[in-house]
Length: 175
Image (tube, rainbow, N blue to C red; front, side, top):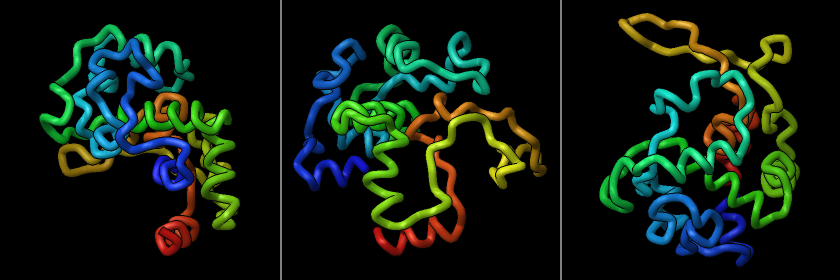
């Protein structure tokens, strides 16, 4: 969706994070490209011992932004490539700011409707097996373990989308 918005001229990949969220530490140094490439150096909120313990509970945007505004970054921007969901959560918030729509509505307008993806959507709650939504698992000590359900607002654009293999194939083909 970020690349679509860049293609439409609604944002530039060289825009700085400060344009959207000036209170985040180093936001004046971090570009959208660095967020896309996991090169922002931002604090990894999923490693926060005091922050997001109850990941099955909704997380407010303001709480997330406050956490990133007070916690020291993990590294300097563009110094290293380190996977961090905070990058994509922020990109999701930027998508909302640029489009003036919720992430779910932007996903529908920019991706799922044009590609006719009928089984791809932004989740509204923790995974529901009755709706054929997969529950999370971790592979530890050579075995699969059931992981705690995560509310989609905690992962937002970094993992709140639900899809099927058929829709993923159609998306990849279109891409």
